[in-house]
Image 1: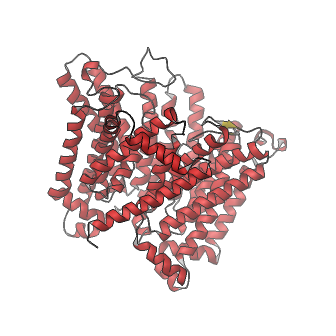
Image 2: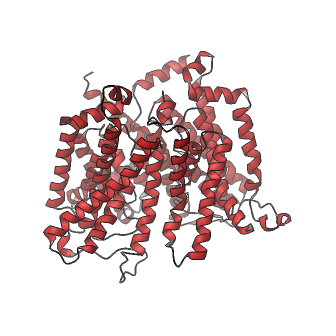
Image 3: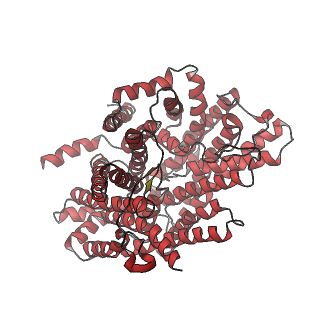
Length: 295
Length: 343
């Protein structure tokens, strides 16, 4: 049981960090499909930082900086050039996936996986079976709390939500929606970097090309499933992680009877079912929240 | 400026902007920007037998891109072309397995139809989730891509596994040599005719039928079309199913044509490239025909680069991604930018 909880926390934490970045963007009125690209950039920068500078801090800072750079680029394209958020987000994701592959080739000479000598600090043997978890897992509840306070209990959070729901009203009260969206995307950058860092350096200490494997998109689905609320998105991300952890468990137990590739598809199926449920709950008309968000 | 010329200039301007971004990225990782771009163009258009390579990569992309145009025009972001392409190839491979021993004139059309059916089914469930429950099709079709990729791994390492295969990549038994519609290395008259038919029928459907006109209107203003009495849900499901069927057709063409067998994870960028083609072509079927050949050249160059020049093939992914980033941008927004700074 304990190792199942450990596996569940390990697979869920990266999703939660990235989903929180998606929630902040969603509240500001941006459909952030570039999460996947920012997540893998964070993962790559962390491992490369650890390998080259022998320092976790350097890796995390580099990841956060690169993610903020991508965030500014994304903001410029969708907010200033008024590009379609979905297509531009997919482009940002492609930039992250291709850029990390290029960076690996430039630094190490090939696209082979890079392993780091050490990863993020662990919380220590005092916690028994959970001692192998990274500090980012332990920090997660506080980050969720901070996001909730920021988005749901401050003037800034209210203004951000106004920019997403009714930009004209926000502008009428003197808030500049374009600037607020830039702030929202910049807040999401370090969160994506932390999610990627936890994925790459939390337990495995390895980076390989395409290692996010759709987790960024899954986090985005958690944002939608969680109705754009930090707590809702967290619960949704943990639901997807739970299905993934159970799938890995089932693979160990019934691997000879059920094909493992079908068990690997379970989190994606769970995401589809989650979206279906959330759409039903929300009244399920043919107009999705995307059109409403882009008025 | 005339109505037709402006979008072309705008598209060209943003593609130049995308290439500038690519050059910056290439320079950042220590590659020579001009040298890399020159090598890519050289590999795309000036290598031996370039035309054959362009047709080999461009025509299946064109078939999928016509489907993407149909669904995007109706206002639905069917991102799932990749999954529908895979399902088409899987269904065609199963059909080929069941029909083993039958003559080619039965088996080839049956495989193509099976591929279309598979792609259409893989587009049907997101369409139904969208119109019946309101679940957003961007994420459901995206998840469909990942599920389809796992299905492909399962099929090639399970039911259709080639027992004699010893390579690292799992693959199915090769298709009967008599059924192949092209050589492994290139294109053939059959594929050219098939792609030509798809373009002509697609053009006719979009520009000369009530479905095409209504779906174009529904893409811009679904509320108005509903009030005028058109059945938007039926248009949506038809657009999805048609685009899925065309992606599936491309999958079965790849199976019976250049690939000849099903390999796990083959052509992972097909769907995304087809979406780019549809966007660069500005949702015009005729333009998609030319743009698809251009992207086919880029794709073939991406495979050629690492072998001939030692440049990483991810360079092509960067070009695709930058174009995706900028292709939907609007030129009028630049003027808004100036006023924003002046304020």
